[in-house]
Amino acid sequence: MRTEVAIVGAGPAGMLLAHLLARAGIDTVVVETRSQEYVASRTRAGILEQSSVDVLTAAGLGDRLRAEGHEHRGVYLQWPGERHHLDFVDLIGRSVWVYGQTEVQKDLVQAHRGPVLYEVRDAALHDVATAHPHITFTDRDGRAQRLDATVIAGCDGSFGPSRSAVPTSARQVYERTYPYSWLGILADVPPSTDELIYAWHPDGFALHSMRSPEVSRLYLQVPNGTDPADWPDERIWSELANRLGHGQHDWTLTPGPITEKSVLPMRSFVQTPMRHGNLFLAGDAAHIVPPTGAKGLNLAIADVSRLANALTAQLRDNNPRLADRYSDEALTRVWRCTHFSWWMTTMLHTATDPFEAQLQLSQLRWVTSSTAGATGLAENYAGLPL
Ligand code: PHB
Image (cartoon, rainbow, N blue to C red; front, side, top):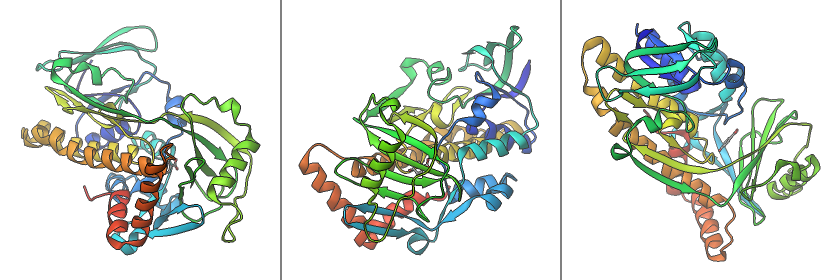
């Protein structure tokens, strides 16, 4: 097989790239180790920055988003006894949208007409620094295949083969682990809030998010290695009520049937550069952020939008300028979001050190009382223009 751009990974990064390139008349083949059903059903974050909405809309993917998504002006930040609303629209004139990654994925799968090979095994990238990069794999019928391409796009997340196809001598890795995880639930109950609540609490961080007017998504900070089996539904709701301030300021948390429960580890990771010869990395294949701030999908969309422009210029107009600048320019945004996600995470997750706890509270008071502090948070949360 031969194509112009071989894309590894059929998640939102790979499918959006395939879709954008198809609109520019560029051929792609997408290969994916998982099944289509698996990729479609993974629960991920649900907040889209303004610029992500703009990219999806320009790509013809904005109709259901606008009909079924919900625009939010801002978020609540709270700690015991206090809840503050940050209004992004007032502060910076930008908003965010609640629309699940699973919905973005459905829209992409429905829109894209090109070949996507699911359930491939043993995918390996070869000769990526040469003019003849290719991928070998076993297809789902058990046949050995070779896919030759002009360019390979690694959109295969942190467990895929693309990231490590860059030789160790040519890559640099930056990493941070955190001493806590999130226990996340989906519940069939209308959200108890109009906008997301980020709560600092001495017993641990909590977040009230949502997917729709009928479905809530909530998280609790838990120690690493937590077994969800140790968290029966009643324990989860009572801890959420405690940390989110049920009963204070006339606010109540309404519990409901939990339909999904899982523990999410947290990590910051960046691999540089994001290009090696004819291999370009995008999304989680190049970087991971902890979920506080909901940047993961948004960063992937920003990478892919930039990469689609760069590959279109290179393959259609023989102009390599944007492709040559891809890694440096993408990494500028990646590091801004890496810092923001780290900052939100370390400001909101309960520290064991009392000195750090006082610094966190001071920081929270500052971002909720100073226009300068609030504007900085708003600008990062709602996302800088592309
Ligand atoms: C989510 O809805 O899953 C979500 C929202 C905001 C975050 C993280 C996750 O910061």
